[in-house]
Length: 158
Image (cartoon, rainbow, N blue to C red):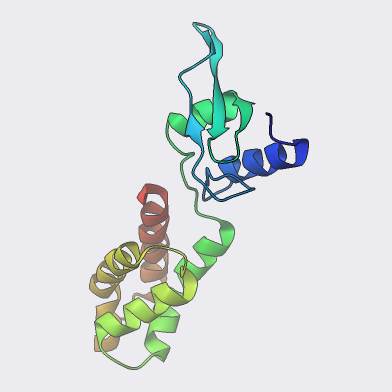
C-alpha cells in the first residue's frame, strides 16, 4: 500500500533536509531501500522506500540517488561566518582555561554538532586564540583565520 501524499511529502522533505532522516512518518521505523527497480544508464535509478511494519511503500528517484551518492556537502551559512569572525572578541570576554573558553564558544554557536566534532573544533581554536590572552594585537587576522577554520570544519564534518 502506498504512503499517503502527505506522508510521501514528509519523507521527501526529511530526506532533503540539512540533517537527512529516513524514518517512516507513521511509526518511526527506518525505511528500507529496494534494489533499483528502474533507471540506469543516462536515466537516474528509481527505488522503492519501504516501511515493513506499516506495509507502506513509495517510489524514490533522484532525491534518493543524491542521498545515496553522499549527503550534499555542508556549507557554512552567513551566520556561521559571522559567529566565527566574532570568536576572538568573545574569547577575550570569557574567563577560564583556554580549552574551557574555546569549548564554551563552540557549544554556544554550534550546539547541534556532535560532542566529538565540537571538541575537535575547540582544540583548533585553543591553538588559534590562546595568543590573545598574551596580548596579541593581531585580532583582525585572527577573525579571518577563525572564519576559515570554522568554514573548513563545517564543510568536512560528517
